[in-house]
Image (tube, one colour):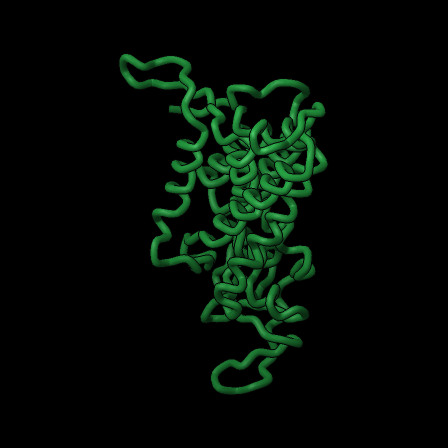
Length: 281
């Protein structure tokens, strides 16, 4: 089955959601142009770092940098190394200077920039599909400004949640999954009985079907989480791992935001965001 849209999506186009999807796809296109090429720096090229990996290191949210503001990272024979004040303990010698071979974004900006980077086409396609379905529906419920605020807050919270799991980790955390998870969390609170129109190819059930949104959200988490059982902190760019704790943290942010909107806010169009009214949706 291929999910298409929320069954009650209506009103104006979800402009913020569309802009976010377009930006993610543009960044993916840029990443694909870098795939397989040698890094621009001679030092990085000597360590067999591709331009695509270089971009991930420079723009990704590296846990060590986020938990040690002002620190720097470089690439050596044993992978990514980071240290405070540009120094790192290497080979038992304190004060070894990190190679100046990266042009890293400011540490405080990397949770934002990392949310637009992805490991592969399948990864970004899955995230953007669910962002379109649930993010678009959520934007219709709470408005573009509140949806964008939720998306950005979740990007930062999810990056830091993964970072505090292992503050010494030097593998960059990349993906929009943490922010997308927030959209799923808020949606399930505001529309717990929501349904999604899907295109089915199953014999005797082919055609357009409506399935519970909660079922699709559970399937999304299964796809994200099952490969990472027992390996929550696998974020190294060479390992193919993913930041699973970041997904859970983003989902929790969405649940809290949805609950606050239900308690204190108003849905778009003037409908009161009360728990009773939401459950009826």
